[in-house]
Image 1 (spheres, rainbow, N blue to C red):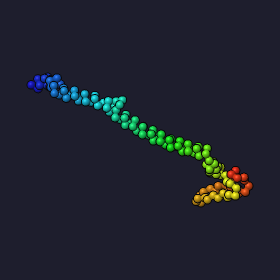
Image 2: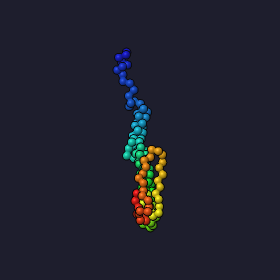
Image 3: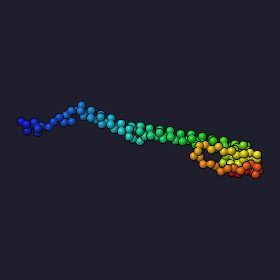
Image 4: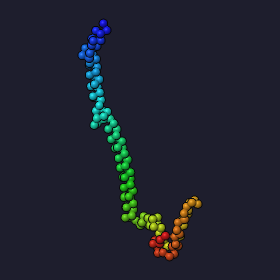
Length: 129
C-alpha cells in the first residue's frame, strides 16, 4: 500500500489553478518592481543624481562668490589708488614717508620678522622691507 501511495503523484501546479494564478501574479509583481528599484530610471539612480546635483550647485555657488569677489577687486584696482596702496603695504611691506613700521609678535614661539628700515630713506610709497 505504501508503494501505491508513493507512486501516485502529489497535487501538481496545473491541478490547482489558484496556486498557479498567485505564482503568476507574484512573478509579474517582481518583474514590474525591477525597473523601479534597479533599472535605468530607478529610485536609487534618481537619488544619486539628486545628490550629485546638490554637490554641483554648491560648488557653482562657491565659484560665483569667488568670481564676484575677484570682479570687485579688479574694479577697485581700476578705479582708485586706495586698493593699490593697500596691496603694496600688505604684500610688499611698503610704507610712506614719515611713517614707522611697527610689528607686534604674538606668543613666545613666534619667529621675529626682519625689521623694516625707517621711512626717511625711501621716497613716498616706494620703501621696501
